[in-house]
Image (cartoon, rainbow, N blue to C red):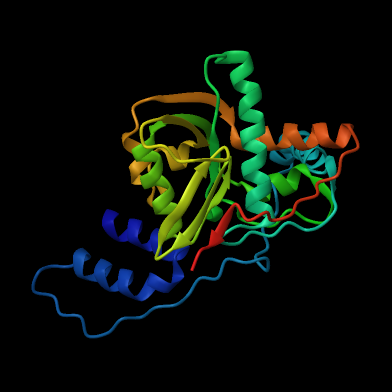
Length: 266
């Protein structure tokens, strides 16, 4: 019976699987010799038509927090001249985000790690969920853009590891990058450059990205084996919010153009 109740609760939450789950539950709840001749089922719809009255006491506790949250989300950080959309091999959105974290990472290094200089940055296209809107850019827009609690991570890659990393981005059609430039030819990187110079396999380079990517997420397993790693503890989203707020306070509008940092070399 306990198994049946668990599956029933799952079925309510996941309606498409209801028939299969109920069939399994029926089998499990009976004896081994039982034969199923008929299965009855129905969908339980959970929507706005359900008449659920909020508890007044609970509402009184939640209301102040909800009000403050809504107020905070409506804060206008800055103004964007155009809507910034994502895409491959490069796009205004991915370029802007990659430039932002590279610039802000320089500030972090000056304060905490003066012996380190970040060479390149990378943001995965799939992690940027919505465009940055034209006009007012609010805190809410940043939560929609980056709904995950990712943190900023610094990784030290050898030249060979960097080449493999760039090749992997090329095989995916490009990602959001800054501090580097490369073409895509036959799904591999063509003439990769770091800070305006050809990639040197004998040198080492510092990369800034999210902990999700650094941990091998979204197919970037190559980065999960990098030993030289600094976890800054700085939230990706917080970095963006603070940066955009500073732009707004200075009266600077977001204005971005593509510049050929990732291009089709065919």
